[in-house]
Image (tube, rainbow, N blue to C red):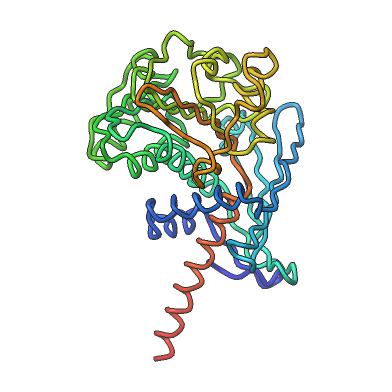
Amino acid sequence: MKKIEELNAFLITNEELKEAIEDIGWKFFISEIKKGFEHSSLGYSMVPEKVYIYTGVSDMRCMPAYLPEYNRDYCGVKIISVAPENPKHGLPSVLGEYLLRDAETQELIAILQAEEMTAYRTGAATGVATEMLARRDSTTLGIIGTGKQAPYQAKAILTVRPSIDRIKVYNRTEQRARDFKAEYEREFGIDITVVELEEAVDCDIVTTLTTATEPFISRELIRPGMHLNGVGADSKTKIEFDPDVLIKSKIFVDDFAQCIHSGEVYQGLERGLVKEEDLIPLGDVVLGKAAGRTSDDDITFFKSTGVAFQDLITAILVFERLKRKIKGRLEKKEH
């Protein structure tokens, strides 16, 4: 973490953020993101809807947040951009920055690179949903799409469901699935198997992480007792599960206002397959205001769109940890 003198603010890189969160640990990190869901459900969070700017080939999203009952000292905004063709230019497809500010003076405190932030907090949100909704005896995890987000999702889910002893992965480009297995099987300490799509869906917990614009998981592939995390389809134009899947499921959302315009939920509402009153905020389940899974046969579906409070909590945790480390180093030098 180095200071940008002209702005009197700290720059925190993706690498520093990653190191800080790994030091914090997934268990604690997930518990803090869970608090964000609680505060959201209680009406304590100030989180306007995302602002989208489309260029025709890319998009930019602005996500401000303030959580005065969580930490009244900070507020901030994430600017995240998705440009699918970027790899052709040697750039990541997701780019972004987080501007962390003093909530009283609005002085800029830190600029955090946001690519790792987005990956970590999205994984942690899925961790909260899986902890609250998946069967406790779940032993198999299916991951569909083995890009950037996949290892973060796996780590979060394994944290809350250590009963899992096998991960089945599918990617449209098989080599990417094989690369995932080679890189993470030893680290996770469990069997990772590269399979076809239907077998990847045949799991206790299924997480989808694609940019698909046509549904590829049909109602017929879903069986009683499953927990589904729909993570990839975060806009009207994206979709992974056939909306008919929602008819069989109890539907939980990270943010009501965002989810009614995203993926399976949006299309399910448009087709009249579900009603808005069928959508249960995950924060209500965390607080005990709403029931989650009520039987081993329930099919639970979590729609993740990414909420600004998740980014703010991540920024606060990382900045506070790095600030303490810097203070500790300075004190050692003085002695």
